[in-house]
Image (cartoon, rainbow, N blue to C red):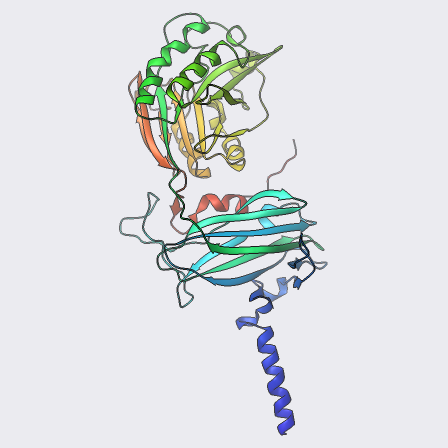
Length: 450
């Protein structure tokens, strides 16, 4: 009897070292294997010889069933108010929709393991006096080398936080697919410094002159005013060389670089700022409606060719673009869209997917609610510059915040609006937290058929 009790005690002790609470399997270095429901559990293991440097990796693998879900989890101590950096490498096999299947999550907890509150309400959609819970963080995918994708994020721990729960997931994988996680790091780092940018829009109709080259100089004084207010980015309206000329799109089109970009390049360099200007581009026999980003060194940073064309441009022989470029500037990543693009969610979403933090929007006219929607649904700043009169209850020249609300608006002709934002400060929403970081992990599958 004594020997039988000893054997039983040994088995219970051994099992307790292999299992955490609620059936969590302990794998390696404190990492546990979990699943939302046991019938969805994939095979979760640690392979000491796996990984890019053969120093080990966690492997989560599906059997012949589809839709399995599992993850590994570990808790790390933190000090509230301090900044921490998370990094892991992820490799997948047999998974097409990696952005949804291979998510990482960080959850802030107090000493007792309970979820904590966000430090203070920001300029988000909280009700007065409300103090919402700190929702999970979602580190982003970065570069991929030899099949291994870096997943990373930097976060300030809420003041109430004493620990962070890190989860590395496998979700809804096809049969026999797998995800490997390795080189997992979580450590205190330097505090995130504010990344301040001053965004400006010009509200002006260049009515003087009947030739395309009469138009650029009419913006010089307004750009100077924006520079005096220390603007970093100034957005001008759409197709400025067409406005008021009575000429066709093709008659106003010019090469990029060309005479108009040369003029604005001089102004950008003189005032040490970025300018976005709407023009028509001629590329051999084709004509495009373009927005051009010019840098403070006087060089063209890049251009965007309008993807969605309204009836008038189609009838006028304009060709649509098909790319959604995003450009690195000294303050952050800038994308551009033009007028009719704002009527469709896909353009701003593609720019956001490609990393845009600010979208410059030269726009003849549009429903201002759509400008708000494009900013809100992507949590980006949108800077519109329009020819529409402010009294028309239609488009406005404004800087839209990440929640879609105008932060500043130019109402009178020949004026500018300018506002200062911090690109390193996320917008936290009630019950969602930093929604922007969740978009790639949660947005739906899109049918890619023509």
